[in-house]
Image (cartoon, rainbow, N blue to C red; front, top):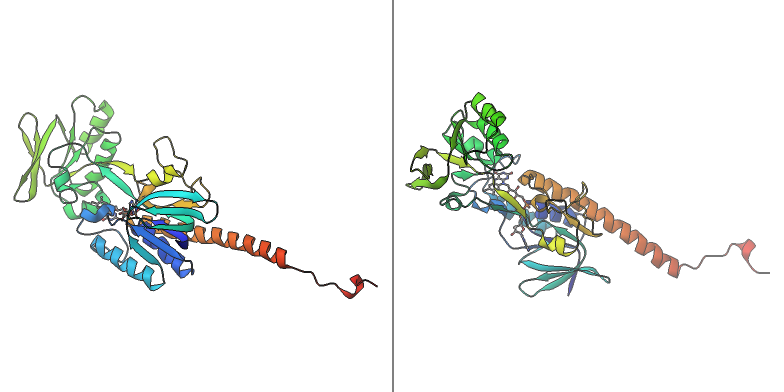
Length: 320
Ligand SMILES: Cc1cc2nc3c(=O)[nH]c(=O)nc-3n(C[C@H](O)[C@H](O)[C@H](O)COP(=O)(O)OP(=O)(O)OC[C@H]3O[C@@H](n4cnc5c(N)ncnc54)[C@H](O)[C@@H]3O)c2cc1C
């Protein structure tokens, strides 16, 4: 069984950035990746300084090349089990049958976007059904936009989307808008449509509008939808990592979880992380991981040194 300093589960921006830092720090590092980054459906990635507009796959391909250049290993595969091992640190079980061990773990498995059950929504995801105004807002600026409301925080989200257009409609189930929310939306000229959405109207491979249950169609060019973020954190909770009241694994600022030796970074622990912040979190975790390994290396060296050390006697200590 192969043994590594660090096994990284998940080869998106967070995992590959960590791997690059660790490989350059001369650590043996293995990235295991199932090849489904969250933004795979997007044609372009925005907001990453110096890489704005790059197809997401190209960033990862360049990242893989850089990691391998420094000796980091990357294997395509899905990890389906992690276990603490008193001898080596941790065992990593890959679904395809391979098993490796590692002194430390970094989990960067991202999150899943769960969309409301509206016909047409999933099919148009990342095209004209969008979730992140910072990722896509500029590309649909000044168009007829909509926000699928009705969930906690959706009105505030609509107010943010409003920055990109003066023609915004907020769709909400009837009877749940508070008076204050209605005033806030109206004050910034956001249209309010109360009703049940039947489906999205698609024509010629473009969103044309939002159809309500009474048959009325509200023309829209793009629809912003706040998804429910679900962390891919089964591997972490399986190891016993602490979670908050919403089920998200908690870490310190470096990504250290409550389980010694286990770190996590990127969307798996932070739904707000953009590509650049996920990469930054991976990098910060790598620096902390390396420091933790150095501490262990020092401990081991001192123990080994202590066992083999025979102090040289000074002349005054010599027996007569
Ligand atoms: C449609 C869309 C468009 C977006 N556009 C932008 C944008 O323009 N700019 C921006 O900054 N952000 C954008 N984002 C957000 C961006 O996707 C995330 O910020 C980023 O992907 C987070 O990186 P990550 O490394 O944490 O997770 P991910 O990129 O999701 O990587 C996680 C990796 O872990 C792997 N994995 C999961 N489970 C396992 C397992 N058990 N074993 C092995 N591997 C596993 C996955 O296959 C994946 O490769 C967008 C998101 C979406 C949904």
